[in-house]
Amino acid sequence: MILDTNALSAVADNEASAARIFSQALSIEVPVIVLGEYRFGIAHSRRRNEYEKWLDELIAVTRALPVDDTTSGHYARIRAKLKKAGRPIPSNDLWIAALCRQHRLPLMSQDGHFDAVPDLKRIA
Image (tube, rainbow, N blue to C red; front, side):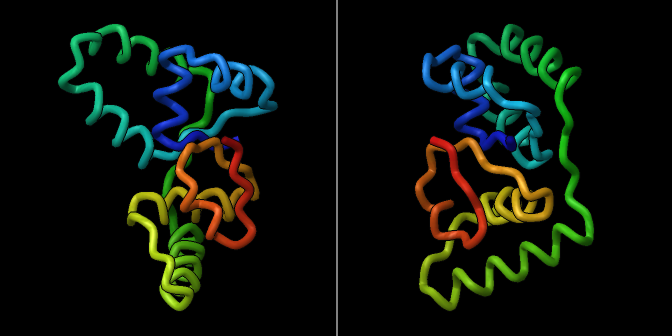
């Protein structure tokens, strides 16, 4: 399962439904895009040190997914389909969706706009 930024935040805050889904996953993957968004978000948090420590521990037991040339092909195809359908999504989310399609993994996210991406399964 791939984590979106809001899912990563929910797991970090030990929200019940997110913690349950997270604990049942066979594997956890975190896109570098999500890591960047999360690090940006916690940069000004009063709990910055706590969140950074938690993130370091998570990264040690998960896989960070890099963006590569294969990802870019998925990105372009998804973006073209969504543009044609008149349903664009934020750029960073396009990259996350591309990684989901590339690795054939579901996405844990609260963002419903991912439902418009063909062949992407979202877990809320």
